[in-house]
Image (cartoon, rainbow, N blue to C red; front, side, top):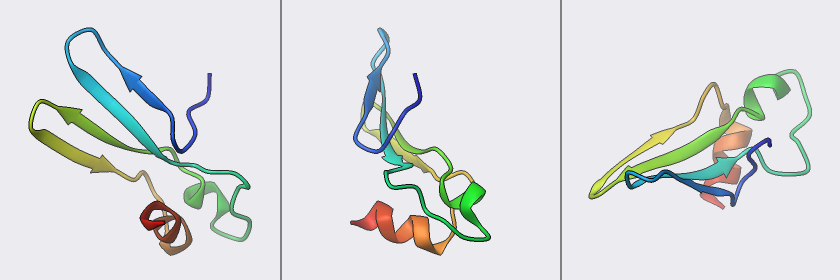
Length: 65
């Protein structure tokens, strides 16, 4: 299974991964491989961290949407 924006994965010990990228349609262009990186928010209890891979400006704009 390949995660996409909107997918949520949960572990038995309380960790949640909420995917914010990539989303369809994929971003085209010279930085496409980076702009279509897997990006997610990891949450455990009150801790949250955003992982964006090598996403560029185009992908970051989608994350904010």
